[in-house]
Structure formats: structure tokens, C-alpha cells
Length: 125
Image (cartoon, rainbow, N blue to C red; front, side):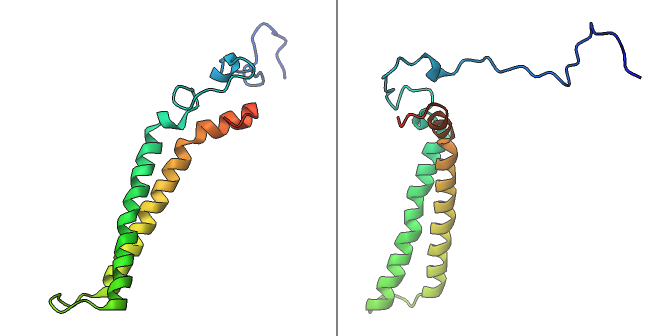
């Protein structure tokens, strides 16, 4: 049995648009925002910078892989102790893969506002 009291709003079936203004709504036509002071800038996000730091840290693993390759090609030298090159190779691969994947993931996450801005406005900057 339905109620005939229409004074009470049925909030479950109503929807209200989001009237919150976006920063790019106030841009003048033809204005190209600089990357540092724009509201959608990836340079303002700490996840972008942490991701870049992790990506640069992945170079340690790549350096270990290069060292293992050079040591296996030209030998370990006379005064150097014997190394387990397979162990060092896997350590380098794991370091490079984990830090590289985490770095790329954080950079992708940090640029989410810029991707939304490009999708919303159709601009490239």
C-alpha cells in the first residue's frame, strides 16, 4: 500500500547534480596553464615524486645485473674472492622489477588528476 503523503521527499530515488566548480572551468579560452601552478598538475603530488625516486632506485638492480654480466664475461680478477653470480643476478632482477613496478605504479597514480583533466576538457596541457 503506498502513501499519499507527497510532502516527504523520496531521497532514495532523487539525484542531485554536483555543482562543485572545477578549477579548469575558470580558465580563459586559449589559456594554457603552466605545469607547476595548475590544479591538475602531477608535480604537486607526492606520489609522483616518490614513484620517481623508486624508479631511480631501480637502477641499483640494473647496475647489479650489469656487474654480473661483466663479471661473467671478463672474469672476477686475481685478488677477488669467488662470488655466487646466480644469486647476485636474481637479487638484481628482483630489485629492478619490484622497485620499477612500484615506481611506475605510483607515477601512474600521481597523474590521475591530469588524465581526468584531459578527458574532461579535451586539452593536451
